[in-house]
Image (cartoon, rainbow, N blue to C red; front, side, top):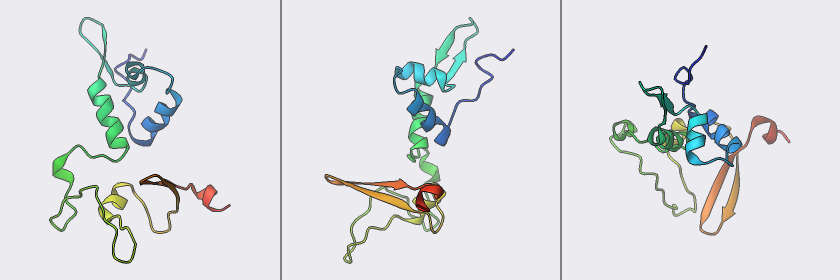
Length: 128
């Protein structure tokens, strides 16, 4: 019989997908259902909210480890870019590698008031 501690907590895209399914629940219940719980020696379930929130940040691309930020040229990624003279905005290879993007991957651009959303298209969406 499997116990609650046997299940590995969800991470990455699986975690984000599960969160969409559980959006009607409280944060504590979301964390519990995504596997962020342990059973104490008194056989009580403890929800690990801190680990859960850190996993969400990492799944969304926010790295919490400061020692892994080097891009090979001695610079750390800053998650800030500026518009070049020719009007282009360049997202460095550090970010595209972190997101496992490949040449030819396509995105939909949605403009908002003072923000831009890049939405990665699935292969079947880009063929339409």
